[in-house]
Amino acid sequence: MGHKKAINNIHDKSYKDLYSNKIVFLNLVKEMLKAHWAKDLNEENLILVDKQYILSDYEENEADIVYRANVDGEEVIFYTLLEFQSTIDYRMPLRLLFYINEILREYIKNSGVEQRKNKKEFKVPAVVPIVLYNATRKWNAPRYFKDIVNQNELFGDNIVNFKYELFDVNHQYTKADLIKNNNITSAIFLLDQKVEPLEFFNRLKSVALEFNILTNREKELLKHWLRNTVDENIRENVVKILEADKEGVENMVANNAFMIEEMKEKVKKETRKQDRIEIVKNAIKLGMNDEGISKLTGLKVEEISKLRTSFLQRRNGKYDS
Image (cartoon, rainbow, N blue to C red; front, side):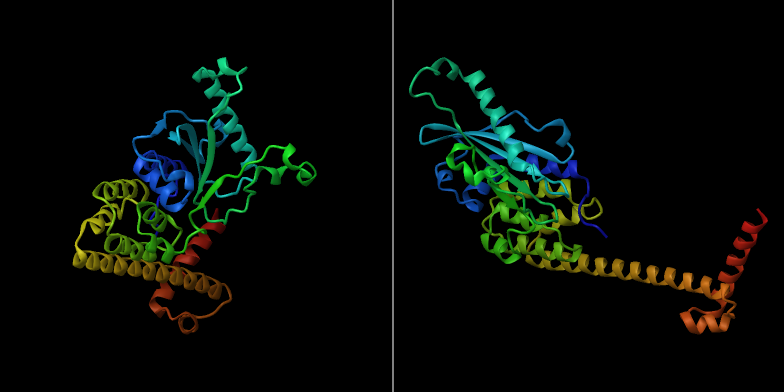
């Protein structure tokens, strides 16, 4: 039983919707990244840019979000790439350089800064690249641009270099760390990590009972995201768990856990039965009688007799054709 949709572009869109909300993005950079430059960011000085820079080759596996902000009186641009490919792209530093170049080229074109090119105070905004990655494999692509340049150690400061910030959802944080953080981003990461369905419900229980500093707005954003990412068979249960009181949460999680275990056991039984049927077919081919096959497989003699009849009919029909 799966508990999440497996379609990349649906997941990309839901993540993009989530981090296009200033509240969630601010929590990401202030509470999870803990960057010193983020301390003065707020909803008033952060502006979402309605522009996408993703190349057409990557549209199925990625999305991006661009924010502008004012930090210490100067403009800063935050470029966040949402990366959901199952394989790691080791060209990431180069691709980010292309995106940064495109952002700055557009800035020069539209801001009027081109007119100041002969003035000593000519400057461009800082562009901060951020990669948010949630696939199963641990991210191990170079973080610094210089690390993809041949013999970079020979050239020191004469070559371009930058470091992108990385959020590796499945490997960068433990369950305990995320619960301890107790914020909207850690709740998202906790529920988005690749885990079995039973563990997913246990984590949902933790969010419902322990994430007590989430605002009502953050809770609504979390529920909206879950509606778009979990399997439709459990969607309403998931939302109800987040809305319930302590007793209701305990009961609903226990009921869902029981259903999951019941379904897993059913799958096991079906698998075992299919395996035994294959053994019956092979035993019939070897000339064993029904009683002997019954002892071998644990199936009833009557059931084996029916399987023998069905098997022989299909085999004879095949030969007749």
